[in-house]
Image 1 (cartoon, rainbow, N blue to C red):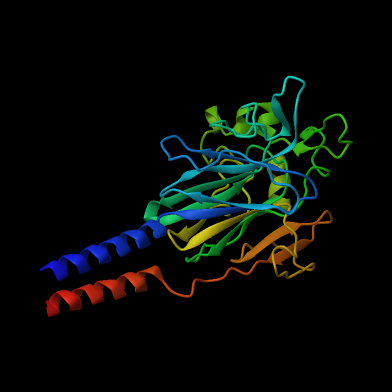
Image 2 (image 1 turned 180 degrees about the vertical axis):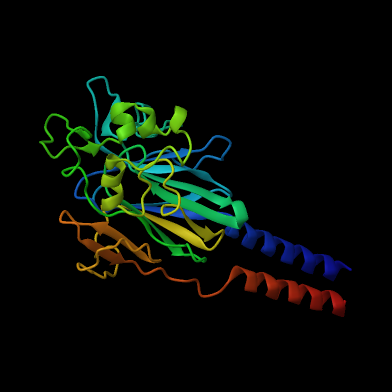
Length: 315
């Protein structure tokens, strides 16, 4: 009997350990920009907080952040940050209003490129996207590491939109020149219901893409360009199968492989690729390799259950 209890206890602990790994994940945040970025991290209401809400990444630096089970929230990059004369920390883009490097529950002041996550969501899936609904401040991609499922793929925006941003959306600050530091959404710029999908425009049939949202969509087809852009902008991986790489200012070298197709005229949303339109309307495709796990968690669990059944039978 003592042997049975010992075996059962050990296997229970092992199963608990594996299960814990299934329902949590790790975000590896990398700054591939030629300038400093201060990531901000915000947990949704009712979600356990991450170990940090903000930190600094110099060019070339990375930091891994573990997430608790069923975490949801958003991650973004702050730029042009400094301490003022009173010692208060502020950023020209993506500022969270905390006055310190840690955001401490503050969200990104638009415009800001956002990586949004809901882990262990509906259907036992992780949901994620890169959203430009609140505008854009720097290139960003999310790449699953491992991952399972037909819609488990890289997403984001590879291109710098600040220079090409329409004049009435462009954010320019002193000392940054005419290229600008960020690009507002039409909702943020004009505060009109047809751009904000509010009031009489609060459903997909009445709130349709505008010429402004199409600017973002043409450049970054996999990113959310307006509130109801779900069909081509939401991605899922089976819960527990993926960690997530978040890269600011991604490059072809940092993404390992590329497949340039300058003659393509469409916007193929094919798994494992991110596509953008160049200034002359041509499409550029960047293929991203996503490694599949060598062994399924379900196989491990099945093996353990079989072993436990054998032990119980022999006892």
